[in-house]
Length: 382
Image (tube, helix red, strand yellow):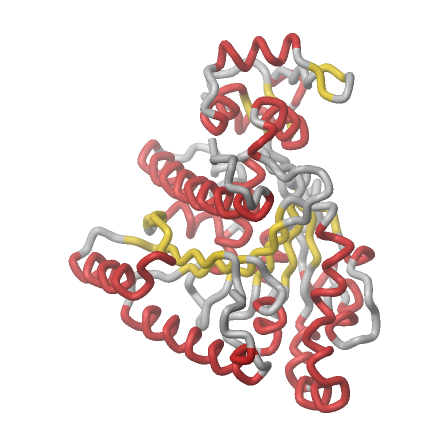
């Protein structure tokens, strides 16, 4: 696992992908590609498998003659459905991916959500890793040990030593998806927290918010991966986010842990004076979805309890438990990265089911984002 452009391969998209995610027939798409211009420039013409080179091996069976990079794909999608995307001058939607315990596919879901949003044509995504374990950093192609130092992370901002995050942004192998990585030294935010609050008051909790201001105008979505606990790093994220995504596997232990997470968060909000403003919503939206879903009776029973517990906050998405996810994770990848060559038909179906589930989750997030970008609610998702 090395830095971008060595061990991981950028994605390519076809007219079939455009048709699937835009809802527009392929014949109409081809007409638009031939005749429409954006800012006076023709739309991308694509490239053949031969022009792509060795990377085209993963495109076998895609049923298309021309392929587009993620940047080109985003340009085409925006030309077809401009009202579906962030308008100029409007800020990014900030999303925190949280859970109280590990092993719930939190980091994998954060990366998969970023890739799914990109697959829907949102061409500017920033992922911020606040988890000292660095799983999100690794999944985006960087090694904490080999590639990252603490001054490349959010640590200087959270400690009050710097004010800008711009210099921390790294390019990744996935075009349009940038990364602010993590390092184990982020854990020092915890040990210094009480002293920091005593010396600087609640202003210490606003450092991340202030540093995000200059980045919000440059991205469509900012996705923050948090530690698997409700510690001060997670609190930094939650107090500076528009929406929360919680992966909640259908198991009794995970359901109990999630309840503890929200109880502790309510206590934290009270400590920071949220009770003084009871009518002010902390989040614009919360989405709880279930990964690792099986067809067993016990799994279905817990899914029923999750539905009763979270009601209107529950996403309609269920990600099936799949060997494809485990196989991808073993190579620091997700189901949106190139599938293993020679994958069996059964594994291919499993892979597609998981991928489609994250696309559906991204579509739900897209609807929430549009209500923020277009508060008049005059626009509906495609």
